[in-house]
Length: 521
Image (cartoon, rainbow, N blue to C red; front, side, top):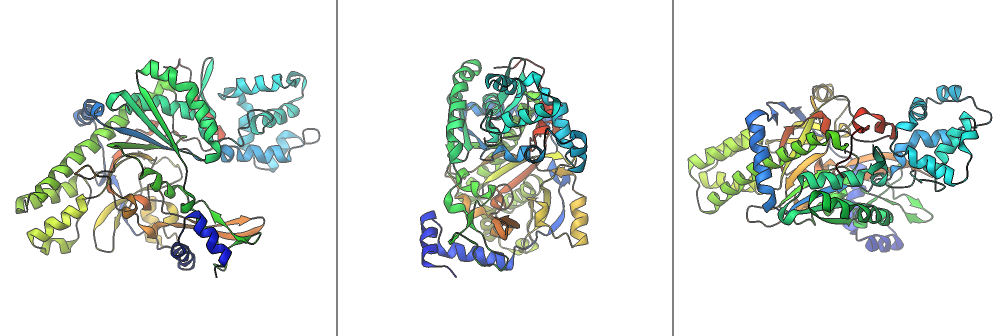
């Protein structure tokens, strides 16, 4: 199946032949569907903190963070091209001289393009875009309405102007503050200073990016940090990493044979789950994880900052209890009272329900079992109420050993032909916004090997095409799905205002992204 030159390419990428064979077997056999026991809801898997309890967790984190090494981990490798999908379609097909705009929009079902042009002046990049057009010598004001539309897209999307169609999402103008705009990266720098400042006033931010985009990121960050360091009295330490080539996955044809292009087998990026390797390299006491496009302007940032601090406090409180129990077990404390106390902690705080077989074990066996459950990375995941956004949600899953745990499950992992499973999916009340704070060190301060906590049966297979030919692509277990399946997990309800992703350019027209206040920096 694999030729000699294929083996050389595989070796060059740092992938073993055994792993390639496993991937091909995954294509042949598929991945098992997740078995939903029930959705996680308020009071049954999702913690709601308010009042004095919220104040307690907020203060716990705020009073502790100056002694911690904190990192903000931001997946930021995505190109912005998907944001402009409909605009690219319009730009490629619309004839400014001969087409009627309204008729073209209706026939091609491009209502989003109409909205874009109707509200184009509300985008943070608009003033810069007009200036670029004028600097290029284009007599924009003399053009008719159709010509103006084409010119705007030409200078927005292509190398003629802002080149947004080819740049990473993180460096695009997101929010306007009277006379200036802020990019998503800059908003993360400001956010980091407000809740992720740790020991020695240091703000560690780690962006996972495409290697091709590094210069853009570095130039942007360097243009901002001196000012932000002065305003917030912090010291930034900004790092970058790339998705490893060794995490790429092989593509196959519809017969599950390696897909070849120009005589070479084709590899594709393994999806965001590959970033578990990047996360594994970070040495920190606490890591916040948040996507690059989920940021808001300063005038509503307080909600996000408070929520993050509360999540940090929940993590600190849980970690303290875990470390205490691990110390007690290590000292030989296997009493019935200790076992009962840990069992209650599992049920009430970590939402872990042990299998019935556990309760017939001896005290020593119970302690050993509990030690293994405690000896895992811990994540606290913010969950927002489901308001129709696509993506994963929080569910109770029962594993093959009968233990119930909390998992973030994507719709692609669910058997849509199973009416019972679909019914449980529809009962879900919350949505995963990728708002995570985690501890990746054990009770002795040693970093976990995160690769040992991945459920490899939670990958994804999708059908794609390449130059007109159909193929199958494989994605690794998602970063917050299967890649963290064996972590100890706490779900906490967070305000909906903390979730404002930008998937299409028109998302920037939402009220939450329309800033009318002066920036803090």
